[in-house]
Image (cartoon, rainbow, N blue to C red):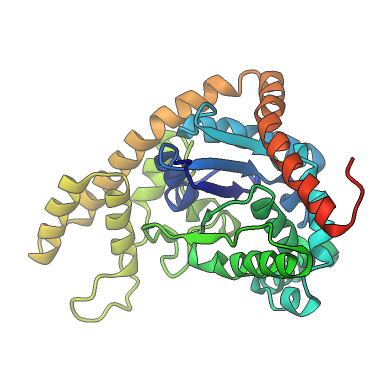
Amino acid sequence: MSKKRVLSCIQPTGEMHIGNYFGAVKNWVDIQDKYECYYGVVDLHAMTMPYDPKILKSNTLRMIAELLACGIDPEKSVLFVQSLVPQHTELTWIFNCVASYGELSRMTQFKDKSEIIENSGKSQFISAGLFTYPVLQAADILIYKADFVPVGRDQVQHLELSRNIAVRFNRQFGEYFPEPQPLLTNIQKLVSLADPTKKMSKSLGEKHYIGLFEEEASIRKKVKSAVTDTGQEQGDLMSEGVENLFNLIKACGKDGEYESLMKDYKQGNLKYKDLKETTADALVELTAPFRKRREELIRDMSYLERLSKELSEKARSVAGETLVGVRKLAGLPVI
Protein backbone atom coordinates (compact mmCIF):
# COMPACT_ATOMS: atom_id res chain seq x y z
CA MET A 1 0.00 0.00 0.00
CA SER A 2 1.20 3.51 -0.80
CA LYS A 3 1.97 5.82 2.09
CA LYS A 4 -0.39 8.59 3.07
CA ARG A 5 0.84 12.03 2.03
CA VAL A 6 1.68 14.81 4.51
CA LEU A 7 2.21 18.50 3.76
CA SER A 8 3.67 21.03 6.17
CA CYS A 9 5.38 24.38 5.66
CA ILE A 10 7.45 26.96 7.51
CA GLN A 11 8.05 30.64 6.85
CA PRO A 12 11.66 31.85 6.43
CA THR A 13 11.34 34.70 8.91
CA GLY A 14 14.71 34.36 10.58
CA GLU A 15 16.53 31.78 12.66
CA MET A 16 14.49 28.89 13.98
CA HIS A 17 13.98 28.74 17.75
CA ILE A 18 13.38 25.74 19.97
CA GLY A 19 9.63 26.40 19.97
CA ASN A 20 9.63 25.92 16.17
CA TYR A 21 11.68 22.75 16.55
CA PHE A 22 9.61 21.04 19.23
CA GLY A 23 6.35 22.42 17.85
CA ALA A 24 6.86 21.28 14.26
CA VAL A 25 10.24 20.34 12.82
CA LYS A 26 11.09 17.52 15.24
CA ASN A 27 7.80 15.90 14.28
CA TRP A 28 8.62 16.38 10.58
CA VAL A 29 11.84 14.44 11.07
CA ASP A 30 10.14 11.70 13.10
CA ILE A 31 7.40 10.96 10.55
CA GLN A 32 9.57 10.81 7.42
CA ASP A 33 9.57 7.01 7.33
CA LYS A 34 5.85 6.63 8.02
CA TYR A 35 4.45 9.09 5.47
CA GLU A 36 5.23 10.53 2.05
CA CYS A 37 6.23 13.98 3.26
CA TYR A 38 6.26 17.31 1.43
CA TYR A 39 7.91 20.13 3.37
CA GLY A 40 7.89 23.68 2.06
CA VAL A 41 9.79 26.86 2.85
CA VAL A 42 7.02 29.34 2.09
CA ASP A 43 8.77 32.54 1.06
CA LEU A 44 5.65 33.90 -0.66
CA HIS A 45 3.84 33.91 2.68
CA ALA A 46 6.69 35.92 4.19
CA MET A 47 5.93 38.71 1.70
CA THR A 48 2.57 39.48 3.35
CA MET A 49 4.32 41.43 6.11
CA PRO A 50 6.84 44.28 5.59
CA TYR A 51 10.17 42.74 4.58
CA ASP A 52 13.60 43.33 3.02
CA PRO A 53 14.09 41.41 -0.28
CA LYS A 54 17.76 40.64 0.39
CA ILE A 55 16.99 39.34 3.86
CA LEU A 56 14.11 37.22 2.53
CA LYS A 57 16.38 35.55 -0.02
CA SER A 58 19.07 34.91 2.58
CA ASN A 59 16.55 33.62 5.14
CA THR A 60 15.05 31.23 2.59
CA LEU A 61 18.40 29.60 1.85
CA ARG A 62 19.28 29.58 5.54
CA MET A 63 15.98 27.84 6.36
CA ILE A 64 16.79 25.11 3.84
CA ALA A 65 20.13 24.65 5.59
CA GLU A 66 18.47 24.58 9.02
CA LEU A 67 15.89 21.98 8.01
CA LEU A 68 18.62 19.76 6.57
CA ALA A 69 20.69 20.27 9.73
CA CYS A 70 17.71 19.19 11.85
CA GLY A 71 17.39 15.91 9.97
CA ILE A 72 15.05 16.47 7.03
CA ASP A 73 16.33 13.91 4.52
CA PRO A 74 15.86 14.79 0.80
CA GLU A 75 16.02 11.06 0.05
CA LYS A 76 12.93 10.50 2.18
CA SER A 77 11.02 13.78 1.91
CA VAL A 78 10.31 16.36 -0.78
CA LEU A 79 11.81 19.63 0.48
CA PHE A 80 10.89 22.63 -1.68
CA VAL A 81 10.87 26.40 -1.87
CA GLN A 82 7.35 27.68 -2.48
CA SER A 83 8.25 30.37 -5.02
CA LEU A 84 10.13 27.80 -7.11
CA VAL A 85 6.85 25.94 -7.62
CA PRO A 86 4.77 28.52 -9.55
CA GLN A 87 1.76 26.19 -9.66
CA HIS A 88 1.04 27.28 -6.06
CA THR A 89 0.18 30.80 -7.15
CA GLU A 90 -1.80 29.70 -10.20
CA LEU A 91 -3.95 27.41 -8.09
CA THR A 92 -4.36 30.24 -5.57
CA TRP A 93 -6.12 32.40 -8.16
CA ILE A 94 -8.48 29.59 -9.07
CA PHE A 95 -9.19 29.01 -5.38
CA ASN A 96 -9.73 32.77 -4.87
CA CYS A 97 -12.71 32.31 -7.17
CA VAL A 98 -13.97 29.40 -5.03
CA ALA A 99 -13.36 30.83 -1.54
CA SER A 100 -15.78 33.37 -0.12
CA TYR A 101 -15.07 36.85 1.19
CA GLY A 102 -16.94 35.99 4.38
CA GLU A 103 -14.65 33.05 5.12
CA LEU A 104 -11.52 35.16 4.71
CA SER A 105 -12.88 38.02 6.80
CA ARG A 106 -13.26 35.62 9.74
CA MET A 107 -9.60 34.53 9.71
CA THR A 108 -8.15 35.52 13.08
CA GLN A 109 -4.55 35.80 11.93
CA PHE A 110 -5.42 38.61 9.53
CA LYS A 111 -6.76 40.59 12.46
CA ASP A 112 -3.79 39.73 14.67
CA LYS A 113 -1.12 40.60 12.09
CA SER A 114 -2.94 43.76 11.04
CA GLU A 115 -2.76 44.92 14.64
CA ILE A 116 0.98 44.18 14.73
CA ILE A 117 1.48 46.43 11.69
CA GLU A 118 -0.77 49.18 13.05
CA ASN A 119 1.03 49.13 16.42
CA SER A 120 4.54 48.98 14.95
CA GLY A 121 4.84 52.75 14.65
CA LYS A 122 6.18 52.28 11.12
CA SER A 123 4.26 51.72 7.89
CA GLN A 124 0.49 51.47 8.26
CA PHE A 125 0.22 49.63 4.94
CA ILE A 126 -1.70 46.37 5.15
CA SER A 127 -1.44 44.30 1.98
CA ALA A 128 -4.28 42.44 0.30
CA GLY A 129 -1.94 39.45 0.41
CA LEU A 130 -2.26 39.40 4.20
CA PHE A 131 -6.02 39.06 3.75
CA THR A 132 -5.94 36.38 1.04
CA TYR A 133 -2.91 34.36 2.15
CA PRO A 134 -5.10 31.60 3.70
CA VAL A 135 -6.14 30.81 0.12
CA LEU A 136 -2.47 30.42 -0.83
CA GLN A 137 -2.13 28.21 2.22
CA ALA A 138 -5.00 26.06 0.93
CA ALA A 139 -3.27 25.84 -2.45
CA ASP A 140 -0.04 24.77 -0.71
CA ILE A 141 -1.89 21.83 0.80
CA LEU A 142 -4.25 20.80 -1.95
CA ILE A 143 -1.84 21.02 -4.88
CA TYR A 144 -0.10 17.95 -3.43
CA LYS A 145 -3.43 16.32 -2.58
CA ALA A 146 -2.19 15.92 0.98
CA ASP A 147 -4.03 13.46 3.23
CA PHE A 148 -2.74 15.00 6.46
CA VAL A 149 -1.44 18.34 7.67
CA PRO A 150 0.40 18.57 11.01
CA VAL A 151 -1.17 21.59 12.70
CA GLY A 152 -1.24 23.36 16.01
CA ARG A 153 -4.53 24.33 17.58
CA ASP A 154 -4.16 27.90 16.27
CA GLN A 155 -3.94 26.66 12.68
CA VAL A 156 -7.03 24.44 12.66
CA GLN A 157 -9.14 27.33 11.32
CA HIS A 158 -6.97 27.62 8.21
CA LEU A 159 -7.10 23.88 7.63
CA GLU A 160 -10.87 24.11 7.78
CA LEU A 161 -10.72 26.70 5.00
CA SER A 162 -8.65 24.27 2.91
CA ARG A 163 -11.22 21.56 3.51
CA ASN A 164 -14.07 23.92 2.60
CA ILE A 165 -12.35 24.94 -0.62
CA ALA A 166 -11.74 21.29 -1.54
CA VAL A 167 -15.40 20.43 -0.96
CA ARG A 168 -16.63 23.46 -2.90
CA PHE A 169 -14.28 22.82 -5.83
CA ASN A 170 -15.32 19.15 -5.97
CA ARG A 171 -19.00 20.08 -5.86
CA GLN A 172 -18.66 22.72 -8.56
CA PHE A 173 -16.27 21.00 -10.98
CA GLY A 174 -16.19 17.29 -10.06
CA GLU A 175 -14.49 15.10 -7.46
CA TYR A 176 -10.77 15.81 -7.47
CA PHE A 177 -9.28 16.94 -4.16
CA PRO A 178 -9.20 14.88 -0.96
CA GLU A 179 -10.23 16.67 2.23
CA PRO A 180 -7.01 17.08 4.25
CA GLN A 181 -7.20 15.92 7.85
CA PRO A 182 -5.30 17.39 10.81
CA LEU A 183 -2.38 15.35 12.09
CA LEU A 184 -2.28 16.28 15.75
CA THR A 185 0.84 15.40 17.73
CA ASN A 186 1.91 15.74 21.34
CA ILE A 187 3.63 19.12 21.58
CA GLN A 188 5.30 20.44 24.69
CA LYS A 189 3.94 23.84 25.65
CA LEU A 190 6.94 26.18 25.64
CA VAL A 191 6.65 29.78 26.78
CA SER A 192 8.89 32.82 27.00
CA LEU A 193 11.82 32.52 29.40
CA ALA A 194 11.46 36.18 30.35
CA ASP A 195 7.66 36.25 30.58
CA PRO A 196 6.11 32.79 31.16
CA THR A 197 2.63 34.20 30.59
CA LYS A 198 3.42 34.56 26.88
CA LYS A 199 4.18 32.04 24.14
CA MET A 200 7.83 31.76 23.10
CA SER A 201 8.21 34.12 20.15
CA LYS A 202 10.97 36.04 18.36
CA SER A 203 8.65 39.03 18.03
CA LEU A 204 8.91 39.62 21.79
CA GLY A 205 12.69 40.09 21.68
CA GLU A 206 15.85 38.01 22.08
CA LYS A 207 15.52 37.33 25.79
CA HIS A 208 12.16 35.62 25.25
CA TYR A 209 13.36 32.69 23.12
CA ILE A 210 16.30 30.34 22.57
CA GLY A 211 17.51 29.92 19.01
CA LEU A 212 17.96 26.35 17.83
CA PHE A 213 21.41 27.31 16.57
CA GLU A 214 22.35 29.68 19.37
CA GLU A 215 25.82 29.64 20.92
CA GLU A 216 26.28 27.73 24.19
CA ALA A 217 27.23 30.77 26.28
CA SER A 218 24.12 32.64 25.17
CA ILE A 219 21.85 29.67 25.91
CA ARG A 220 23.25 29.29 29.41
CA LYS A 221 22.90 33.02 30.09
CA LYS A 222 19.25 33.06 29.03
CA VAL A 223 18.34 29.98 31.05
CA LYS A 224 20.18 31.31 34.11
CA SER A 225 18.11 34.50 33.99
CA ALA A 226 14.82 32.70 33.22
CA VAL A 227 11.86 33.81 35.32
CA THR A 228 10.73 31.12 37.75
CA ASP A 229 8.33 32.59 40.33
CA THR A 230 6.23 35.59 39.34
CA GLY A 231 4.84 36.32 42.80
CA GLN A 232 1.36 35.21 41.78
CA GLU A 233 1.62 31.52 42.71
CA GLN A 234 -1.02 30.04 44.96
CA GLY A 235 -0.56 27.08 47.27
CA ASP A 236 1.21 24.08 45.72
CA LEU A 237 0.49 25.15 42.13
CA MET A 238 3.68 25.07 40.04
CA SER A 239 4.57 28.45 38.56
CA GLU A 240 4.50 28.80 34.78
CA GLY A 241 8.22 29.61 34.68
CA VAL A 242 9.21 26.49 36.62
CA GLU A 243 6.83 24.36 34.57
CA ASN A 244 8.42 25.72 31.39
CA LEU A 245 11.89 24.62 32.51
CA PHE A 246 10.57 21.15 33.33
CA ASN A 247 8.91 21.02 29.91
CA LEU A 248 12.18 21.93 28.23
CA ILE A 249 14.03 19.14 30.01
CA LYS A 250 11.35 16.63 29.04
CA ALA A 251 11.23 17.87 25.43
CA CYS A 252 14.98 17.30 25.16
CA GLY A 253 14.44 13.65 26.09
CA LYS A 254 16.03 13.84 29.52
CA ASP A 255 13.42 11.72 31.27
CA GLY A 256 15.72 10.59 34.08
CA GLU A 257 16.71 14.12 35.00
CA TYR A 258 13.09 15.22 34.71
CA GLU A 259 11.87 12.55 37.13
CA SER A 260 14.66 13.24 39.62
CA LEU A 261 14.03 16.98 39.70
CA MET A 262 10.27 16.48 39.83
CA LYS A 263 10.74 14.27 42.87
CA ASP A 264 12.76 17.05 44.52
CA TYR A 265 10.02 19.53 43.64
CA LYS A 266 7.26 17.40 45.16
CA GLN A 267 9.32 16.90 48.31
CA GLY A 268 9.99 20.63 48.57
CA ASN A 269 13.74 20.20 48.02
CA LEU A 270 14.09 21.61 44.52
CA LYS A 271 16.80 24.20 43.99
CA TYR A 272 16.17 26.49 41.04
CA LYS A 273 19.91 26.59 40.39
CA ASP A 274 19.91 22.82 39.75
CA LEU A 275 16.79 23.05 37.61
CA LYS A 276 18.30 25.78 35.44
CA GLU A 277 21.66 24.03 35.09
CA THR A 278 19.98 20.80 34.00
CA THR A 279 17.81 22.71 31.52
CA ALA A 280 20.82 24.51 30.06
CA ASP A 281 22.82 21.26 29.79
CA ALA A 282 19.95 19.55 27.96
CA LEU A 283 19.54 22.42 25.50
CA VAL A 284 23.26 22.70 24.80
CA GLU A 285 23.48 18.96 24.15
CA LEU A 286 20.47 19.15 21.82
CA THR A 287 21.59 22.17 19.79
CA ALA A 288 25.34 21.57 19.41
CA PRO A 289 25.11 19.04 16.52
CA PHE A 290 22.48 21.15 14.75
CA ARG A 291 24.71 24.22 14.95
CA LYS A 292 27.75 22.32 13.64
CA ARG A 293 25.84 20.87 10.68
CA ARG A 294 24.29 24.23 9.75
CA GLU A 295 27.69 25.92 9.81
CA GLU A 296 28.95 23.32 7.35
CA LEU A 297 26.01 23.92 5.02
CA ILE A 298 25.96 27.73 4.98
CA ARG A 299 29.63 28.09 4.15
CA ASP A 300 28.61 27.96 0.50
CA MET A 301 25.40 29.91 -0.14
CA SER A 302 25.69 29.41 -3.90
CA TYR A 303 25.59 25.66 -3.26
CA LEU A 304 22.44 26.10 -1.16
CA GLU A 305 20.87 28.13 -3.96
CA ARG A 306 21.55 25.33 -6.47
CA LEU A 307 20.37 22.72 -3.99
CA SER A 308 17.09 24.52 -3.28
CA LYS A 309 16.30 24.52 -7.00
CA GLU A 310 17.15 20.84 -7.35
CA LEU A 311 15.08 19.88 -4.29
CA SER A 312 12.08 21.81 -5.65
CA GLU A 313 12.01 19.97 -8.99
CA LYS A 314 10.06 16.97 -7.72
CA ALA A 315 7.51 19.20 -6.02
CA ARG A 316 7.10 21.14 -9.25
CA SER A 317 6.47 17.90 -11.16
CA VAL A 318 3.75 16.72 -8.77
CA ALA A 319 2.15 20.17 -8.57
CA GLY A 320 2.14 20.39 -12.35
CA GLU A 321 0.24 17.11 -12.67
CA THR A 322 -2.38 18.34 -10.20
CA LEU A 323 -2.82 21.59 -12.07
CA VAL A 324 -3.39 19.82 -15.39
CA GLY A 325 -6.40 18.12 -13.82
CA VAL A 326 -7.61 21.37 -12.28
CA ARG A 327 -7.43 23.18 -15.62
CA LYS A 328 -9.40 20.47 -17.38
CA LEU A 329 -12.15 20.50 -14.74
CA ALA A 330 -12.32 24.29 -14.47
CA GLY A 331 -12.66 24.83 -18.23
CA LEU A 332 -9.17 26.26 -18.75
CA PRO A 333 -6.83 25.27 -21.60
CA VAL A 334 -4.09 22.81 -20.68
CA ILE A 335 -0.61 24.16 -21.31
